[in-house]
Amino acid sequence: MNQVGLVGRFTKDPVLRYLSGNRVQTHFSLAINRNFKNNQGEVDTDFVFCTALGRLAENIVKYCGKGSLIGTTGRIQTRSFVNEESTKIFMTEIVVEDVRFYQLKQRDSDEAVTIPPQPPNEQEHLKDFVLP
Image 1 (spheres, rainbow, N blue to C red):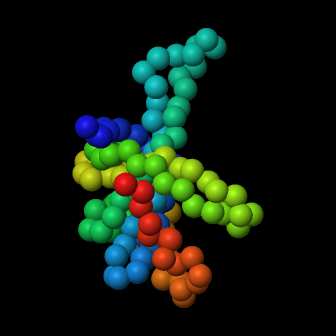
Image 2: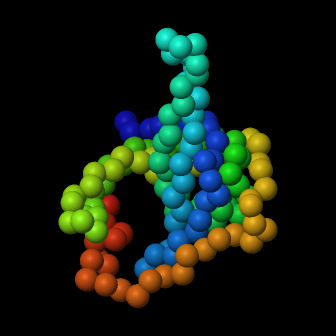
């Protein structure tokens, strides 16, 4: 079983991206405090990278801003890509399947930020590639 539940705060305003075939997604990072203190008596924080697709992504971008507290359930996914320096990068993220809005904060701007689709390039077919 591959299932994850997280409660955390947005580290910045989420941005909506348009993919091929009229699909949308958003990437965001959640700051999650640990339940215990370290040796210095401070609470450590983990930063977890998350991805949401479709209508769920639209609602997250519409209602959440930096500092919003949300709960998510989803699955862990690992993927890889080649960066500008031709280095293969491996990435582990949470693919969000459900979200609960606990404490919403206003976005820095009133309008939801969107990134328009880019013209295709030679690696366009790899952009939406997901490892099984």
